[in-house]
Image 1: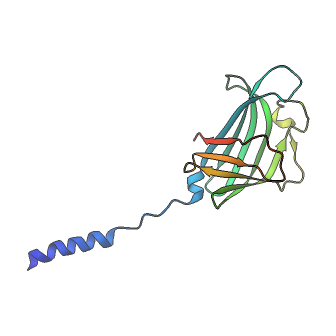
Image 2 (image 1 turned 90 degrees about the vertical axis):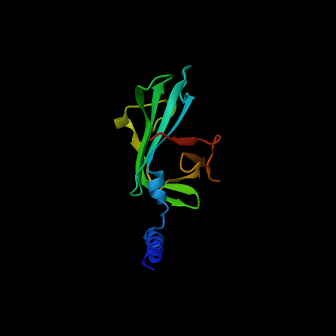
Image 3 (image 1 turned 120 degrees about the horizontal axis):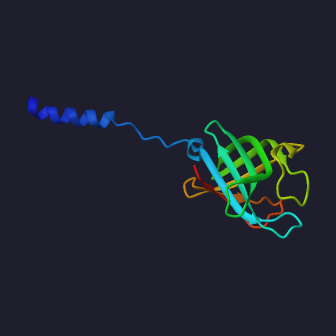
Length: 159
Protein backbone atom coordinates (compact mmCIF):
# COMPACT_ATOMS: atom_id res chain seq x y z
CA UNK A 1 0.00 0.00 0.00
CA UNK A 2 2.82 2.37 0.84
CA UNK A 3 4.44 1.76 -2.56
CA UNK A 4 1.23 2.76 -4.44
CA UNK A 5 0.85 5.94 -2.40
CA UNK A 6 4.36 7.25 -3.14
CA UNK A 7 3.76 8.00 -6.87
CA UNK A 8 0.51 9.83 -6.04
CA UNK A 9 2.26 12.00 -3.44
CA UNK A 10 5.08 12.79 -5.91
CA UNK A 11 2.57 13.72 -8.61
CA UNK A 12 0.65 15.97 -6.20
CA UNK A 13 3.89 17.72 -5.16
CA UNK A 14 4.83 18.35 -8.78
CA UNK A 15 1.41 19.76 -9.69
CA UNK A 16 1.13 22.06 -6.67
CA UNK A 17 4.74 23.23 -6.76
CA UNK A 18 4.49 24.59 -10.34
CA UNK A 19 4.04 28.34 -10.40
CA UNK A 20 2.14 30.20 -13.06
CA UNK A 21 4.52 31.85 -15.50
CA UNK A 22 3.92 35.58 -15.34
CA UNK A 23 3.93 37.71 -18.45
CA UNK A 24 6.72 40.28 -18.32
CA UNK A 25 5.47 43.82 -17.76
CA UNK A 26 5.28 46.07 -20.85
CA UNK A 27 7.87 48.40 -19.28
CA UNK A 28 10.38 45.56 -18.94
CA UNK A 29 9.67 44.45 -22.52
CA UNK A 30 10.38 47.87 -24.03
CA UNK A 31 13.39 48.62 -21.83
CA UNK A 32 16.37 49.33 -24.10
CA UNK A 33 17.65 51.56 -26.89
CA UNK A 34 15.87 52.11 -30.21
CA UNK A 35 17.48 53.73 -33.28
CA UNK A 36 16.21 55.40 -36.44
CA UNK A 37 18.62 56.50 -39.16
CA UNK A 38 18.16 58.17 -42.55
CA UNK A 39 20.05 60.30 -45.07
CA UNK A 40 19.18 63.91 -45.63
CA UNK A 41 20.11 67.57 -45.84
CA UNK A 42 18.26 70.46 -44.19
CA UNK A 43 20.55 73.24 -45.43
CA UNK A 44 21.30 75.02 -48.68
CA UNK A 45 24.45 73.03 -49.37
CA UNK A 46 24.81 70.17 -51.82
CA UNK A 47 25.81 67.45 -49.35
CA UNK A 48 24.02 64.53 -47.68
CA UNK A 49 24.35 63.59 -44.02
CA UNK A 50 23.24 60.68 -41.87
CA UNK A 51 20.58 61.72 -39.36
CA UNK A 52 20.41 59.43 -36.32
CA UNK A 53 17.65 59.44 -33.69
CA UNK A 54 17.98 57.38 -30.50
CA UNK A 55 15.48 56.72 -27.72
CA UNK A 56 16.34 54.94 -24.48
CA UNK A 57 13.42 53.49 -22.52
CA UNK A 58 13.93 52.67 -18.84
CA UNK A 59 11.80 50.19 -16.88
CA UNK A 60 10.78 52.96 -14.44
CA UNK A 61 8.72 54.75 -17.13
CA UNK A 62 11.29 57.37 -18.12
CA UNK A 63 12.70 57.91 -21.61
CA UNK A 64 15.56 59.98 -23.02
CA UNK A 65 16.51 60.64 -26.60
CA UNK A 66 18.85 62.50 -28.86
CA UNK A 67 19.07 63.35 -32.53
CA UNK A 68 22.51 63.82 -34.01
CA UNK A 69 24.17 64.13 -37.41
CA UNK A 70 27.13 62.20 -38.83
CA UNK A 71 28.93 62.10 -42.14
CA UNK A 72 27.66 59.34 -44.43
CA UNK A 73 29.29 55.99 -43.59
CA UNK A 74 30.73 57.35 -40.34
CA UNK A 75 29.88 57.09 -36.65
CA UNK A 76 31.60 60.35 -35.71
CA UNK A 77 29.03 62.83 -34.39
CA UNK A 78 29.27 66.21 -36.14
CA UNK A 79 26.60 67.86 -33.97
CA UNK A 80 23.07 67.58 -32.64
CA UNK A 81 19.58 68.36 -33.92
CA UNK A 82 17.82 67.81 -30.60
CA UNK A 83 17.53 65.88 -27.36
CA UNK A 84 14.85 65.26 -24.77
CA UNK A 85 13.86 63.62 -21.51
CA UNK A 86 10.41 62.59 -20.43
CA UNK A 87 8.14 59.72 -19.55
CA UNK A 88 6.23 57.08 -21.44
CA UNK A 89 3.21 54.86 -21.07
CA UNK A 90 2.10 51.78 -22.98
CA UNK A 91 -1.58 51.45 -23.90
CA UNK A 92 -3.41 49.36 -26.48
CA UNK A 93 -0.28 48.41 -28.44
CA UNK A 94 1.10 51.95 -28.50
CA UNK A 95 3.91 53.76 -26.70
CA UNK A 96 3.02 57.35 -25.79
CA UNK A 97 6.04 59.56 -25.09
CA UNK A 98 5.44 62.73 -23.05
CA UNK A 99 8.31 65.18 -23.31
CA UNK A 100 9.47 66.88 -20.12
CA UNK A 101 12.38 68.81 -21.60
CA UNK A 102 12.78 69.10 -25.35
CA UNK A 103 15.70 70.89 -26.98
CA UNK A 104 15.80 71.64 -30.73
CA UNK A 105 17.89 73.48 -33.33
CA UNK A 106 16.02 76.81 -33.13
CA UNK A 107 17.52 77.77 -36.51
CA UNK A 108 16.17 76.73 -39.88
CA UNK A 109 18.32 75.41 -42.71
CA UNK A 110 21.07 73.83 -40.59
CA UNK A 111 21.97 70.15 -40.24
CA UNK A 112 23.43 70.29 -36.72
CA UNK A 113 24.71 72.51 -33.92
CA UNK A 114 26.80 71.94 -30.81
CA UNK A 115 24.58 70.39 -28.13
CA UNK A 116 24.92 73.42 -25.85
CA UNK A 117 23.52 75.71 -28.60
CA UNK A 118 20.19 73.87 -28.84
CA UNK A 119 17.11 75.77 -27.63
CA UNK A 120 14.58 74.60 -25.02
CA UNK A 121 11.09 74.25 -26.50
CA UNK A 122 8.27 76.14 -24.83
CA UNK A 123 5.70 74.90 -23.93
CA UNK A 124 6.85 71.37 -23.17
CA UNK A 125 3.56 69.48 -23.27
CA UNK A 126 4.38 67.62 -26.49
CA UNK A 127 3.62 63.93 -26.98
CA UNK A 128 4.40 61.35 -29.67
CA UNK A 129 2.88 57.94 -30.33
CA UNK A 130 4.58 54.83 -31.66
CA UNK A 131 3.05 51.52 -32.68
CA UNK A 132 4.71 48.43 -31.20
CA UNK A 133 5.81 45.88 -33.81
CA UNK A 134 7.35 42.41 -33.68
CA UNK A 135 7.27 41.83 -29.94
CA UNK A 136 8.94 45.17 -29.05
CA UNK A 137 11.70 44.85 -31.67
CA UNK A 138 10.49 47.91 -33.60
CA UNK A 139 8.51 51.10 -32.92
CA UNK A 140 6.69 52.81 -35.80
CA UNK A 141 5.82 56.51 -35.63
CA UNK A 142 2.08 57.18 -35.64
CA UNK A 143 1.31 60.45 -37.38
CA UNK A 144 -1.55 62.30 -35.69
CA UNK A 145 -4.22 64.05 -37.72
CA UNK A 146 -2.81 67.42 -36.54
CA UNK A 147 0.74 66.73 -37.81
CA UNK A 148 2.43 67.07 -41.14
CA UNK A 149 4.23 63.79 -41.72
CA UNK A 150 6.41 62.73 -44.63
CA UNK A 151 5.96 58.98 -44.50
CA UNK A 152 6.48 56.86 -41.43
CA UNK A 153 9.72 56.32 -39.62
CA UNK A 154 10.59 53.39 -37.47
CA UNK A 155 12.93 52.79 -34.58
CA UNK A 156 14.66 49.42 -34.36
CA UNK A 157 15.85 47.96 -31.05
CA UNK A 158 19.66 48.04 -30.89
CA UNK A 159 20.15 47.20 -27.18
